[in-house]
Length: 132
Image (tube, rainbow, N blue to C red; front, side, top):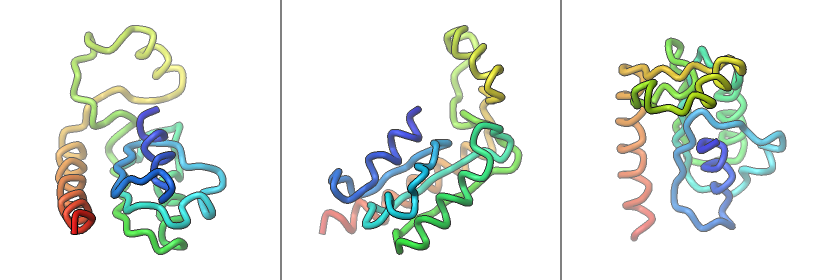
């Protein structure tokens, strides 16, 4: 849900200087939706069955609209790969729903560390330039 919300807030009319959607659904009208959007850094898990092709679709829409971006799909990661909570901290209903939908709730350290590094660097570059 959070990644999808971050994408919904990316259009220029929302007033944000940068967005970091992680494993979010790409709007069906992405080519027109992202026209004039703020810079976007996005991360997806290659093993995420719910979002197959999302990174590619987002990359294409952002490129077509000349939106500054950094989109990456991590082949060894699933959905929620940035979530380093212990499984016992995740509500049972969310764990069951994730299994039904084919989403992995497991943290994938190498992908998460790289994604966090990319987000920090992207925000550092784009938020500092927005202050000027």
